[in-house]
Structures are given as structure tokens and as C-alpha cells.
Picture 1: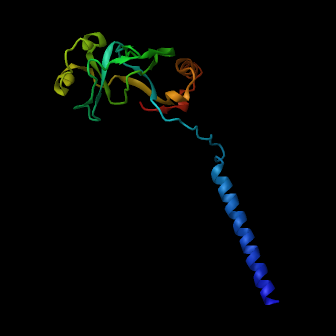
Picture 2: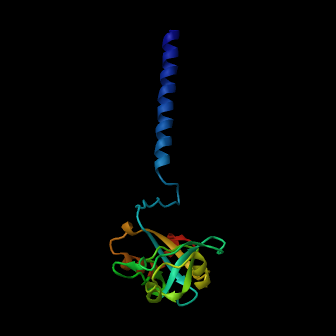
Length: 174
């Protein structure tokens, strides 16, 4: 009789353990109440949209260090093209621009235009680039909107997000 009793208790413990593990696993897979399920982002080129404090559409962007005192990266004169044309940003609704160059929060704009820069025989030095910086803090707003592979019609879908007031669902960088 004792063996049956021990076996029954053991069986009950195993059943309760498996139920508690199962419910724990299930709850971990479900989003918490009032929390939206996370969007699965695809790897690929980042979609950055932004507004600036000035008119920098034609100006070449470069990347500065976080303290804005040195150049981290800049394009060569032949690297300022996107799909065979100058890599100007695309104009979106409400004054936003879609980056086509690879900018981030530490981007600055140069005093010279894409056209002027493309005529350089060779890439300028980092010191020369720093001397050409027009604005090292040009952004009033900047959002990371996922990967270019997340969209079927990139500009149209971004314009829809902007005009329907859904930018708050994007990662604000600035």
C-alpha cells in the first residue's frame, strides 16, 4: 500500500510539473496584456527618414564622431551615386526625407553639393572634410523605420505612415 501511495504522489508531482511548465512556455510565447506583438524585422539596408533645420538636399552628408570633432567616414567622389544618379534623399510627405546615402544621428552636411564633390580628382582628407562641414547638427527629427526589405513600395508606404500619424510606432533616433 505504501508503494502505491508513493507512486500516486510521484505521478501527481509529474503531472503538476508538466502542466506548470506548459503554461509557463505558453505565456512566454504570448505578448503581455496591452503589449503589441513585436514586428519581425528583416535584415537589410536601414530605412531612415528625417527632417532638417536647413535646406541640405543638395549637400553631401558625412559621418562624424559622437562628439562631432572628427570624421568617421565620408564618400569618395565616385561613391555619391545611387542607382546611377546622385544619391539625393527622396522627398516624402510633410517635409520628411528618405535617406539614400547611409546617414545616422552623427551625420553632418558639407558646404559643397553632390555635383561639386563629384568633380574632385581624389577624395579629400579627413581634415579637409572637417573644414567643409556646413552643419554638424542638422536634424530636427530622425526615425529608423526598419529595413528596405520590410516594404513592397517603400516611398508610398512611408508616406502612408507619415500622413496617418503612425511615426510613433517607429524608432525615434532624434
